[in-house]
Image (cartoon, rainbow, N blue to C red; front, side, top):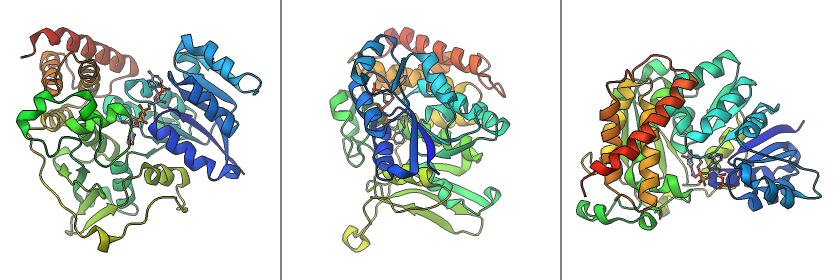
Length: 390
Ligand code: NDP
């Protein structure tokens, strides 16, 4: 029987890769809903191609365009936050969460409430509300499968293992666009330069986050939340070839490394076919041709995002929501040319320092608390702009 599937963030990098895999097995899947943001032309084209029941744009003012683009197709069109949540509540066997940023949290939570399998690419969900996501999944018998390549790698290395026997988890980082730049040049880096990734083809925001290692910082926090592993056991390692995605070390000294080509269709396909493994259209690695794999320790002075993430992993509670909200605003300001590349971390640190007095370490925050912490972090980030060193 065909599995019913919904894709949030269908028009983005992860969404397009997901639809590429779905299109290769059309008889296996029935597409319930696709969602997007401003790219309604692509959304309509995708919905027509897979025969979706429903297409939703996040923006109310784009509903007219979406309707026009779907005219005559019989596909329902809807817009706005409530429509996104309704799409999440439509019965489906498998839902991809690939909206970028904190906006992905609520649709993911809504999907978990219907007891589905949630393929989680949106890393901000676990960073901002890890305990809430996991508790919601437990309460409704839903399952979360990681899609981020590092977490998919850890998940695969842990099959059949006892987490209590894990001694360390190493997640790798390509080092991003500036890994070979001298530190003093970073202050002048432009958004266009930061958005050119050496190995992966991803959306603009995550690519810039890779250059600053904020992406890796989010992944450290996500690893701690998803697998429940002690933060002291989790580390990042720069591995420029991006072939090993993560390594898990066990009490007996053994280390399981997950190796695969830098192609997101691997991790997406693993989650799509889980618990089976099926053939995927990804490159097969030729190690004799690759020759060598290299590694270096990340430089904390150059990448303050990792140090900040360590604090968040210790504090937990609302600190992830504050970290992410401030990071998202810092990224907006960098893309808009209001601050420099290295000032993003400075801004986030200022917000975390300003808000530490506000009981961020609360044990089990609910959605309203998370939303409130996120909103306050964003406005603190805007207010802190004036205090940055030029
Ligand atoms: P993209 O920017 O390529 O795509 C984002 C998607 O979200 C698009 O469909 C976009 O719509 C939609 N969107 C944007 N803003 C909103 C909003 N406010 N409300 C609803 N929908 C919105 O991102 P990626 O695909 O690169 O990343 C998606 C998520 O997956 C991120 O959390 C990222 O960190 C994570 N991830 C991505 C990886 C990758 O390889 N790209 C790897 C691992 C994780 P539109 O474009 O139509 O405006």
